[in-house]
Image 1 (cartoon, helix red, strand yellow):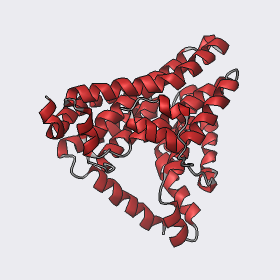
Image 2 (cartoon, one colour):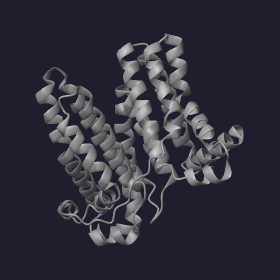
Image 3 (tube, one colour):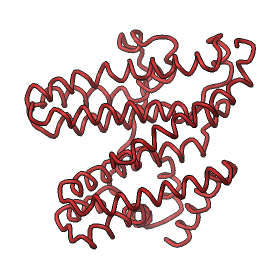
Image 4 (spheres, helix red, strand yellow):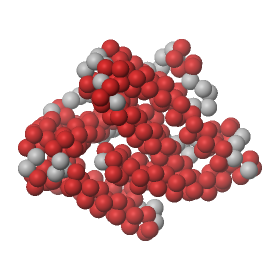
Length: 314
């Protein structure tokens, strides 16, 4: 049963990368190999290994919250939690192997959290509230209006708790990660092409507007948390700053990936694959330049792709 599910996942991954071209597939393979090398080197350092453990757990927790196949697994498999756990073990396997090689027992013990995650019945609350907060979001930021409406009851409590407990060194850092991944999910689905036409902008100007708007809106909730962290922990000021830079980079990257593989009113498997790889790669700061290079590459592809719809505004 576990073997069959893993085979299904492999086929889904294959469909996700199939059609993106041989060159991009080779590039992905090279990126994964580079990520493996960096993971092996960084896991030899105890502090870096701890960050890798926590980052991996948060990433898997995010997957658990966002996955849409829970009902299917529950209704078709009697031991669906075991199946989910097996998937997470496979995802964590490279990290576990590196920790075992370097005898990083403490970071490895953190991964015991994998036993807990499949049992968490976390559901994203979807809200139809139209609050004053949503009215303040610019009309051209349709992703944010939709995302804030869906995740209102997660975003606000996370921010309030982080701000009120910012004297604890970990609260703000964890909150930025949670907010960052939630906001990244705003860009999972492409809007209908009519939305693109409504901007009446060329492809280049539309992409620049998207980038400017997303960074602006992301900065509004995150920068106050960064300031609070620095006030209470000035000796570690660089940690939330690095987080901020990483998630700004990932936001820009996700926008470019979305429009590089734009499919009107649909989720692009290729874009989701690249964003997932970019998110994992960004946990290791050494790979961040690779995300920047891919961003430039996807920008060029996005312009070419969007020109099909926006050529009249060039």
